Length: 89
Image (cartoon, rainbow, N blue to C red; front, side):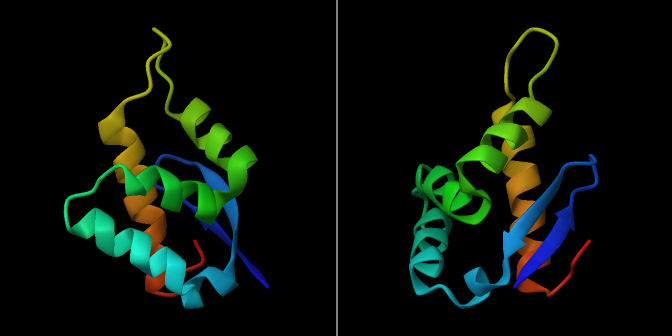
């Protein structure tokens, strides 16, 4: 089963609801909480899949071609929070 998610900036993705009960994803997110921010990339690829993750990066690319770390983290955090709260939009 999947759920549609949409961020306040307008990015839309389809997420596997099974990830809500994925222990390895929880481990990755705990590592992020403990300061290993590099695990956020691995967790994001797990949540979005490679294609949607690439689309999220493009969504956050500015006119100079740079992808803001701050914006990416905000988008990912918003989606992960929404998943944990059971929101679907």
